[in-house]
Every structure is written in C-alpha cells, then in structure tokens.
Amino acid sequence: MPTMLGAVAFAFALAISCWANAATPPAVAVAATATATATVTATRDEDRIAYPSGYTRWTHIRSGLITAKHPAFPRFGGLHHIYANPGSLEGYRSGRYADGSVLVYDLFETRDHGDGIVDQGPRRQIDVMVKDSKRFAATGGWGYAEFAVGTTTDRLSNADRDGCAACHASRKQHGHVFSEWPNRAEPRAGES
Ligand code: HEC
Image 1 (cartoon, rainbow, N blue to C red):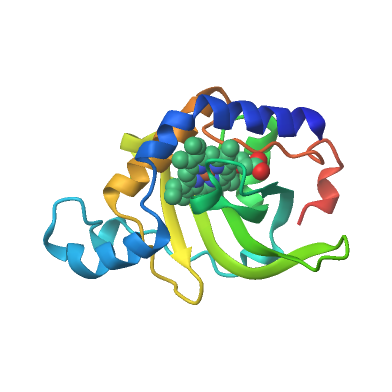
Image 2: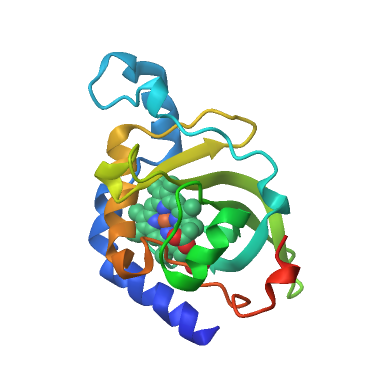
C-alpha cells in the first residue's frame, strides 16, 4: 500500500501541469453545460458515455483519500473508491484493457467528527472511463465521463475530457490506468 500511495503521489507530482488544464471546477462545469450547446467544445450527444448502472456491485479495486493539502482537492478531493467491471479485471493483471472495460472513481466528501473519527460523507460525483479503441481512438482508446450526484448525463465538455486523457496518458505503460489491484493474484473464482 505505501508503494501504491507513493506511486499515486508521484503520478500527481508528474501531472501537476495537467491540473491547470484539467476539467473545469464543478460549479463552472454546470454553468458551462447550460450555455455551451452552441460552442465547438460542447460534447455531442453521440459521444456521451452511458451512466454505469450497478457499478457498486462490481469489483472494488482500492480506495484513497485526497486531502485539502493536495492541488487535486478542488476537483477530486475526498474519499474515493475505484470499481472495475468484470471485463476489465484481466486488464488489471496484464496492463492491456479489453474493449468494454469500465472503471469508476466514486468520490465522497469526508466528515470529521472531531473525536478522531473521520468517515464517509455525501457523494460528490463519479468519474468514469470506458474502453472502446475505435470510438475513443483520439484519447488513447478510453472515453471519459463525469456524473454529478443524482444525474445520469455526462457533464464533461470535450476540453474537459482532453484534460482527463492527458493526465491518464502518463500511465500509458499501464493501459492509461493509474490504480493497481492488490487482489489481482487471488483465485479467479472469487471475482464475479
Ligand atoms: C492530474 C491527473 C489526473 C487527471 C486530470 C484525471 N485523473 Fe483520473 N486518476 C488519476 C489518478 C492518480 C488516479 C488513481 C487514484 C487511485 O489509485 O487511488 C485516477 C483514477 C481514475 C479512475 C479509476 C481508474 C484508474 O485510472 O485508476 C477513473 C475512472 C478516472 N480517474 C477518471 C477520470 C476522469 C473522468 C477525469 C477527468 C474529468 C480524470 N480522471 C482526470 C489522475 C488524474
């Protein structure tokens, strides 16, 4: 686990410049969605990724905490859990993700109870990656989406998605996926 946290910290350090270009903060993104239908950066409906229904029953890959000290906090701060659909698990082993792989970054606020206990608060958003090497060839074969709480429509613009893809491209050797799966060596029978 320390190794992985180190790797993530390293990735974030490498990717600091990405954050400047990364997706717009949530409030701005919502405003942009309302007004951007006529702009060239608006995401066309046919490019949008479907909401990944039932993802919390998929395989839990790992969890992590991004605190206010980190530059990523405004966009991705809080407690996150990463879930992977059955078709993506082989990718976690080999680094080559099959078309149809779906990964979800499920982000929650944290609540500090002041007595030494910090737990999971309300959900903030989910971020999603879908592998389709033809459809998303321009972004390393992965499509990127983000869903606000209570919505099932991707709120990212194309510019936002380029920001996601640019940072994830720093993990090209690992199929553009940052997280590693600690249980990947366990018997496959337990996966479904
Ligand atoms: C500056 C770098 C950076 C940017 C920009 C970024 N991510 Fe990530 N993303 C990460 C890191 C690092 C992790 C791994 C977190 C962990 O292992 O706990 C991650 C994890 C994920 C995961 C889980 C799969 C994986 O790669 O581990 C998804 C899904 C995801 N991000 C979607 C998105 C979406 C959608 C966007 C754009 C809105 C985005 N990301 C923008 C760095 C970034």
